[in-house]
Amino acid sequence: MSGVHVYPLNDLIEHDTDGGDCICGPDYEYIDPATGEAYPDGPVVTHHSLDGREQDEEPWLRETPTQSGASVEGDDTERGSS
Image 1 (cartoon, rainbow, N blue to C red):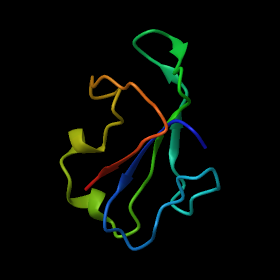
Image 2 (tube, rainbow, N blue to C red):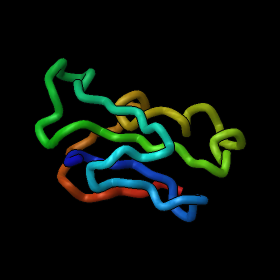
Image 3 (tube, rainbow, N blue to C red):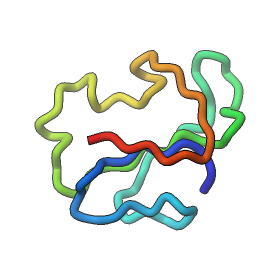
Image 4 (cartoon, helix red, strand yellow):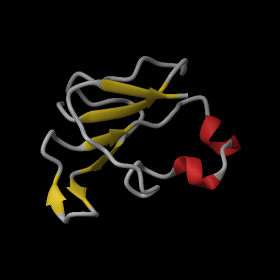
């Protein structure tokens, strides 16, 4: 699937960022809450780790890019988060 993929690095699996269904059950964000319009390059796809690392993160680290106020300008580039 095109769009911007945010996924954990060095996880227990290799996350599917090529358009299939990823086993991690990623969240899809289609609408930019700042503008109320669809993201022009496709959704922001936030993948979840299978090793449980989110349990040790601060709550603000679990926010999607737009929930945290970050600007998201997507292309088909895969972006990882550790």
